[in-house]
Image (tube, rainbow, N blue to C red):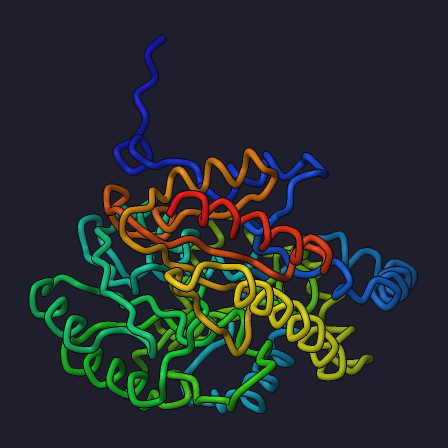
Length: 395
């Protein structure tokens, strides 16, 4: 039988990163291609203790259906935390618990965009968001990143050229994959342009609490007085990725429609994990836990940068992140990115090519993403040496 796949899905490709994950089952592979939290960052003992308490005291609540908006105590805890940490407290906003940050990004597009509407995206950008928007039938238009964030001149031109642009997707803090942080001036500039042209900003901030250098910069959402910013957060990088818990803070009119859309997708996010998360936030010191994660990533990032400084040819440019999980490397002209990726994998080092992070898959790239949270210290040292050797041989 010939299967007639829907127009939304027939041209979509699997996530390059998820496909690379399949090769990482080989324990000899040095996984610079992943984006997983460090295994030592999980508070296993505390979560085990809380889990036992939940099943002893509230087993039915943990195993029964719940409400779509999310576990009320967790919603309250999230709202209080983002107000304290990021000054996000606009009256008229609503907090919605999602199945990972990824679901919130997809729900925002599903609610705000018709098929053919434009989503403006920083380029490069997070592949999960790009595929979510493609699955909604949106047209993606990339706007180049500079060292301090999105190019505001080209952003305004993109808004002029695309009057049906509904959303602007940004990761202003510790960008994935670029590793940069958008300046305060560019955050204000992007917000002003969004207001001028009637575009809603999706501010994706899964890494915002993972700063290990530099000074905090206000979130775009904290500057929003017009209700034009949808804020996405996640517990994946600060508690557990496998829990698949994220949250959206959005104007109530938008959030209520996202609730309806979520009911169609999964009814509600895993209630046991919501209870587990809220109890951890209430009974344990989440700030102290996050400070421990920052120390891990500070050491791992510095170790990778030291290796790159020592071994990588000087013609290769790479970012120096102040937080998050990623370093973005750019090759000089004359070197094939595909050849570097292939040869590195043959020598047991997995990296993600920049072509995975562009709006138009046909767009060429000279860049690749490195992750320092997943590999061990020994793997970081050895993997950087191998990768540097591969590139030096191709010069």
